Length: 171
Image (tube, rainbow, N blue to C red):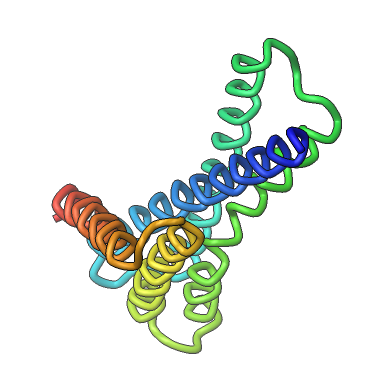
């Protein structure tokens, strides 16, 4: 019975880490998208696509290094093969939150619509992704519905604050 509880706890810890990594990547992507929109009245879609792709790749690498180092600090050893495989899969999985934004900008780079439209769509879809991540985070909480709503409202306020700071820094 203890093994089952430990396995459940480890699964929850891994889910939490995956959600956290996705939040990091999504906010980083959102910051870049906001900066690209704010600094150029006529953005170049190909340049925006490249900038976002490089930023996401760099963030994923940073998340991987952070996971690796934190694992070594917590466990006083390098991760085993299975642990490392999970670390890599989780880290690469975090990059998936940026795929819709990259697609929006990529379609603009192909000429389907203006780059500013692609950046706006990318900003909206990244914001929607953050909302979805928040919903995933609270859906399994063993708390009453009103507390879950309050938690989501708190997350929304914090997310709006982060977005406001990003806009302010590029305004």
